Image 1 (cartoon, rainbow, N blue to C red):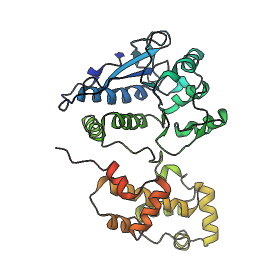
Image 2 (spheres, rainbow, N blue to C red):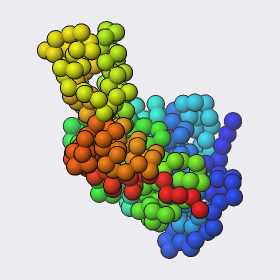
Image 3 (cartoon, rainbow, N blue to C red):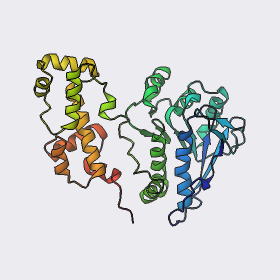
Image 4 (cartoon, rainbow, N blue to C red):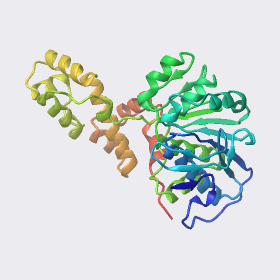
Length: 340
């Protein structure tokens, strides 16, 4: 099965009314064997959708080292537009991730070292940060990658400041994202930067993406970020916390539910989940509040109470501390605008 990528006609449905584009931006996507196919097709669909909305805004091209087809990790064959050697200098250079980046082709790394600095914007999806780091292009920058490879990237490239939490990070002209679908979020953020918020939201709705997630949203839910406890009483407490974020979640109350002393409970909980009860509660409450802000029209005060914060001010402090943005701004960025 072969698919020609880099063509705006990849978006088959009738799109929204077109608007005029001011500047065309060439987006060059590097492709190679054993890449993650969605790391390519996700962002390509976003830019292609933006091109349909705003003709002349983007020209998407793909290129492999030798210009030949590549086989993704899922078995899909991608046919690029040409070779990297013949590619023009792009406005945006995107390097996808996948197994093929873990020991990247030296020819790709060498090409990136020589040609990537000419791009106005340098982007990686998932482990695409690894070949960029090997080319010395991420030194001194704050970046992210798939959560499973953050430690490896930080260990192998100590000059790179790896942040394992957000789904994407911007540092100057370099933008890096977490795994797979986070590349769609990053591409939508770039479209918003280029064409405006309404254009990005229109593309997101047309692709049936609920709405792009802000970059500082965590890669993990609270339940995924922590391990599941081994002992049944502690697992039950974890579940109870998730189902009752507005309840009494102090250590003494939780310890009573587990039939343990507060001291023994706190030690056992951290040993089995990898985090303290207080931090786990904080994550659950933040996640609960985020979902209410994203999915409902409930007021800030109501959400604060339902999430266990008690007051809007307490919730605001928690959001600013963890996400760098207050709840009202989070809702503005993440709650879907009504469709017309």
